[in-house]
Image: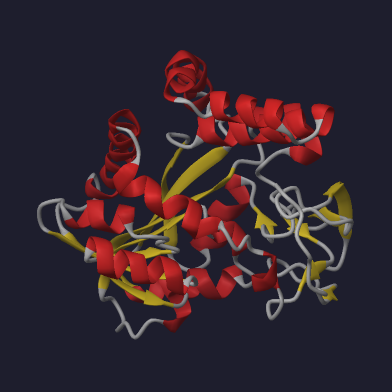
Length: 318
């Protein structure tokens, strides 16, 4: 949320990758709330299929310049050095994610796409009968996953992997699919890699969330310019079905507190600016006591499937 010297970014104006239409209807616009700068980025709705997408958008060749340099250095120390209550809550969240996979298979081989520093892949590998691999675009994150957690991780994306047809039982993408430029090719590749009955687990911003209505263009789910496509759940269900991936579950079950707290932080900084007070309020919003106090509210909105993140699970048909 602090400004830095920003590079020149090349923008492009492609048609909708889902349906091919070139009929963008403006929905929201804002600057980069993480890196700062004056460039205004825009989310549009496709006038034909209804998907939300960034238009214009940074080219795939330059988008990497718009990811915060300090993303992983901030996150890495927390895995082993955060207070016990933070560690306990993190492990609880990871195990909830593991159960989303293990309810469909008692064991097998999993690939976590966008594995970051490897905490989920590590947790999944502790489940009886499971092995886990990871891929991520960050060399720093992959090195940490390998060296500190012993995770089998590689730099890359789903389409880069040297995997044979029908060689995986599960593929997970936790808050990754919204960053993808070519969603059709990713779904096609996932269908190729999964064994019949294997599952694809996608967590992505929920365009039907309460937070989107409350916060408008500062909603964390937009996360401009790094989020490329945002999917109504029914549209994504129909899109996945084109590749033989049948939706078997749709739920909001994690990440709602953090998403709302981040959107509130953006609102606070817009009203009172950055400084000690806003930093103190941000720390309070993310504190364990705040999480405990707010848990009943988030439990209710998650049950209503109105949390900021929604998880959709697809099973490969025979």
